[in-house]
Image 1 (cartoon, helix red, strand yellow):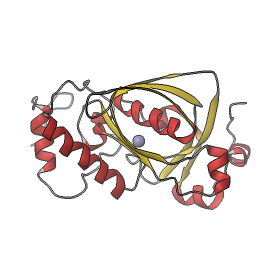
Image 2 (tube, rainbow, N blue to C red):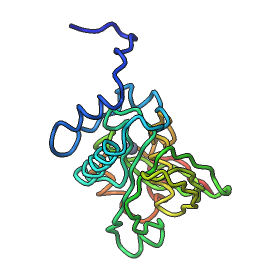
Image 3 (cartoon, protein in one colour):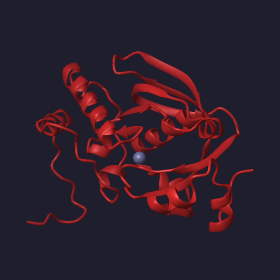
Length: 219
Ligand code: ZN
């Protein structure tokens, strides 16, 4: 039976929701764009999952991120509206790309209740994609450097400055927790299928894409 549009589902405790998700072995299904869970925002984590369940949930997020594969995954992307995300990037790229995009390896991190602020006016614009928007990429001009405040999975406070590609990952994942998708911030004229991006726009910078697709890059 169809439910009435606009009527919210009965409130299930988040711990029950997570327990149910973890009943199945293997990577969790990733929620695609169009599902309201990606748009509603999230509850700050405040012990809704006991330490054992949190550990299992984080492990499942990490396994799902690896399987996708991706360099970050936020809890709403597996249908859980909690302010938790994971990031990890082995950065398998050429030296040239590493230098231009600042794509240095980012060890595995759990971000609990993260938020970020720009440390300055600098912007960096590059193609990025999202596991919830499979098959597509677009250029997003993001803060070149951000200060992240968060907690880790053990409750320790984190206050750290990120630049380069890790800064992009931190912004992308934290935005998910606020109900934002990268397309909300993207240059829409840059939108490219993965195939087009690989064939045409694999240069270290999106300058040529900007010229030929007709969008502007930050100066
Ligand atoms: Zn994403």
